[in-house]
Each structure stands twice: as C-alpha cells, then as structure tokens.
Length: 120
Image (spheres, helix red, strand yellow):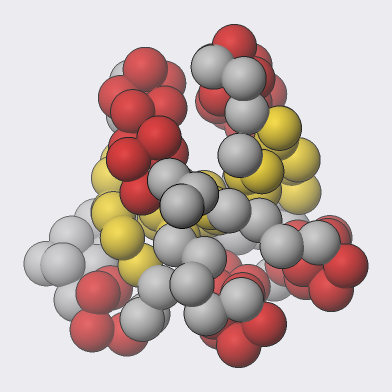
C-alpha cells in the first residue's frame, strides 16, 4: 500500500512513517501543499494522512486535488486544533474517512490506514 503523509511537523510525520513502514507500507512524506500536490501529479496514493492545519499551504487544496485526480483515495485528517471537531469535515470533503487528533497513538493510526486504505 502506498501512503502519503502531509504533515508540517517533520518529527511527527517521521513517527507515523516508521510505524506504517513496519507494517510493510510504502510511505512518502510531504511538509506542505506544494510538495503534496507535486507528488500527486505523478503518483496515486492508496491513502493520504493530511494535517488539517498546514504551515505551508492549504489542506483543503490538497484534499480537493486528490479528490479530483484520484476520487477513490481516502483521506484521514489529523489536527491539533478543535476546528471541525463537530464532524463537519465530512460534509466539506468527500474523500474524508476519519478525523483524529495529532496526538493519536501511531498504532491506532496504522490500524485506520489498514482499514480505510485496503486495496482491492
């Protein structure tokens, strides 16, 4: 499975990446909108883990581009804020499958990736 992590905090992204790679997944990390969209121009991810509040660019732009280019690719949104804590992210982003805090246990995040990113 090919996973794209879009996370502004490189240390946090690296923790998630190591957990996923231990489960046999191929993982690419991007720090912001430009690098994520550049990756998606050439490669389809089976799942995207996307920080809702990016320091460089817009998470919505990344999710919209992914939905346009690869409409079947699910997105797990992560955030360290309470914005969208009411679940309305699912009304705004058609490819949203989960919404969790950035403090999510990496093992739990890995289980969600395995569940939502199943390649059939």
